Image 1 (tube, rainbow, N blue to C red):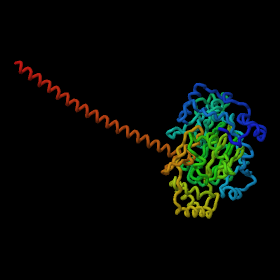
Image 2 (image 1 turned 90 degrees about the horizontal axis):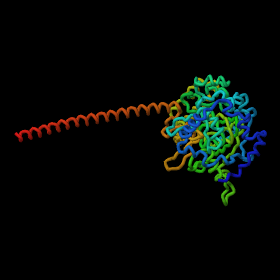
Image 3 (image 1 turned 60 degrees about the horizontal axis):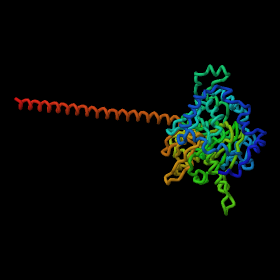
Image 4 (image 1 turned 45 degrees about the vertical axis):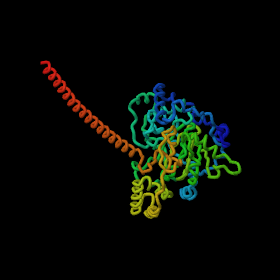
Length: 510
């Protein structure tokens, strides 16, 4: 399929980005995974085959590069990027809320990574030295179980098979903030190679939430109760996130440390059938190859393309930039080279009404817990805001009681190689619905699908399965017992009949 007019040669953009080509940016020092840690080739092949089959069961192991997307050029012209940029040190929080958050307008923010340890620690060499033996989530299987891959094998995959795969495997891990221990096995080997095994929670200490987004009301519900909201993201060229809107009406920020990302954003009023049509999969690279060219095409008799008519925004995110995505905006993201990023969803006081309406329907218990906490703060005040501030929030929420619940789309995760591109859901009239981020999605019946609740549901399902098996075994045992007893009675009667016949025969002979 021909590429859109916004594509152009990679060499043009390399001059714009301080003379570094995308390949050099992905691996400036030419360091390979095998230079840092030993890779068992047979074990790697077995592991990556298993991961691919679990993550995308609909694909044969030999079909991951059948479309030849690796031969396409997906870079965009600098002229196509019209998204405004602001510096965090020059725009106050109040101005940001008034100009961008309150009206719901996306924007790129620079300067958020100043002082972050991640600027120096989040690179290929350092991550391999610290987390080579840790497992990161790259998707889900058909049963909704997380599919994980050891980091050293994943990095080796990007250097080998990942270059030719249409949509490579993609680390999209929300568990890096949880406490964990490094495996004791192999620690001596790591020490000999000057490697430092660490827990994944150390990644949490390498960055700080930007000042515009640190007032997250969901923090009041507790870390264990709130949905997953932060992700460590790492992937190679052509991996990414399929078209989706962030769940529960939350907004999001995405900070890029290494590489470049291509974004397409659509206002909440955009018809979902237009941007998320039925297709073979919901990978980001498939969307940019098959859907975007149709949106950019100017039909005969019209002066504008569908993308211009509905206000589509294209952006090229560079290292050190933070993308702000307002709640309700549909977006699709693809990595143009090797990228490392961190992203979080949040509920700010500015968007509390939109988030509350959706949370009340999808997660009623979570909504009530949030409301009870805000009501309590309205009487005693908080460290950040006064009692009057929280009273105003309570009044806003109370005013929404008469508004009917907003329908929340239910989507099942695709367990794809992107880890975050989801299968679309189907509503009652058969229309395809824009999917939402799988890590936080709630069921159509309001069932929570966070890690803790999923584990509880699994344990409950296992108990029910054991009870069912026990009942079936008991029925089978009773059936066999009845058959044995009945069979014994029949044999006894047969013996008696045989004996009677024999006696009658003897009497006749006498």
